[in-house]
Figure: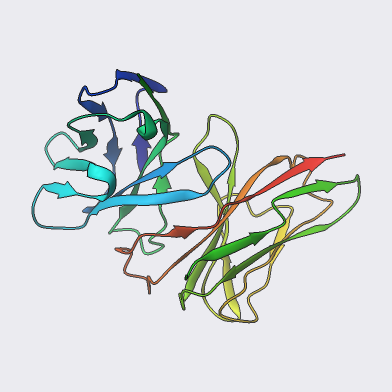
Length: 115
Length: 115
């Protein structure tokens, strides 16, 4: 069955430290992977995606993510966290074997950056 | 600026009442989506449309209805058959034409509550 797991409900990081938000997935075919961020009472904003090619993907606001096919993971990273990075982060995957091509969403990880 | 506009921002429903949530986009996107977001859960797909005058049920379509008479507009009606409508509703669009490699763009949501 297709699924996305974000194993941590909440991640706490001190400002200036590196951050990682984890995502693992299970699909039948090749995955298209996405990260989104949501601020309180707002819609989701697209951060980055992996479709094919280089396993390290760079996105908005200094975020990057690394696609690891053997570990079926797509962790979101940033070298130096800012207080303004505090938000809810969602990982999503499309299964290229699924003719519906609908996104499968993780439950979200709340990121808290402490000054 | 191009984007997605959802209205109203807050909506209250009485027992037995149908209410309609508006979603308009000026991105010239073919595909549009409605999601429901509950606390601690990921996004759940209600309906989606890949072309005018055509739409498909998502995972939780019961108690909801949609129309797609214009490319720019995809209104969602929450009917009285939806017994637990209290949630944050998000509309999205994408330039995707069934390939699945394009990100979705989101509106800022409508928060629906029961009176």
